[in-house]
Amino acid sequence: MRAVWLRRFGGPEVLTVEETPDPVPGEGQVVVEAAAIGITYVETQVRSGSAPMPLPELPVIPGNGVAGTVVTAGPGADPALVGQRVATTTGGSGGYAEKVAVDAALVIPIPDALDFREAVGLLNDGRTALGIGRAVAPGPGDWVLIGAGGSGVGSLLIQVVKQTGARVVAAASSSPKLGLALGRGADVVVDYTGPGWEKVVRDATGGAGVDIACDAAGGDLGRAAFELVRPGGRFIAFGAGCGTMTRIPEEDVAARGVTLVPMGAAFPSPAVMQQLSVEALAEGAAGRLRPAVGQTFPLDRAADAHAAVGARRTLGKTLLIP
Image (cartoon, rainbow, N blue to C red):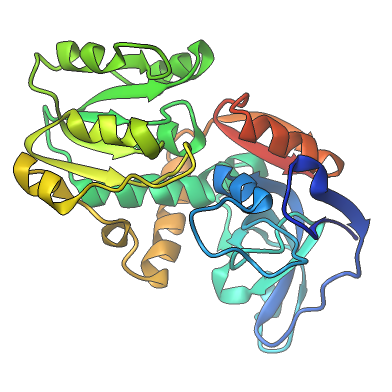
């Protein structure tokens, strides 16, 4: 099979497509032939060696979200899974390949109403949106600031928040992304790469600021998002698009009376994460969550895909197609 390897940290060009032995399923595993593979922004940070998390030992096949067909079941795995359309995480690596071996307990049957691309668009990003939405618990009439509103996660989080009756200010970095956010239900959109974007948010919310801010950017933008939360509101950081997660000193939190919601509240256990993925696919099949697959690349062009995602030239979710 073909697989994308990361053998040294660096620019997109360090990703190489190589002929690799097919995976053999171990005890309790199945092999999935991939039809669509998800790419996340943090995977570009891992590739460059700049991710705000422990880096993997090299060499490694990156990728953590795949949809495809089960082609082999190993010992201890249900042979009835063979032939089923499934979506699955991979445990953090191995996804950028034509085939991947995963624990059979991780595979989620894809509802008939979804295709492979939609399933991958919901698998990880959908569970993130559902988990964050429940952790920050918006109520009817609340104003919620959502960063990266034109991304895969952001566009889904807008829909999750709107279902609670809350109002959304979506921040993004280009006109197409702002358009996607509006199309997914945002009440107000703002380009947070321009000057004065904070005033736009305050004006839209009657000067009081937002009740909840969901920060995907980190760095100075994350700090600015925190400052837009009214006293008594809530703030959650779920991304590091600027390179670092937002860190708010305890004295600033206390002075503002803002509650910092940890990501652990969204994902308290692996079992909850798995269940959220199941729910995300079900919500997609029911038409209540619409993933935005903005662009696809052949597996052989994984480096080009990473370059586009890293430069923020993409819209919604980016996929590799073997």
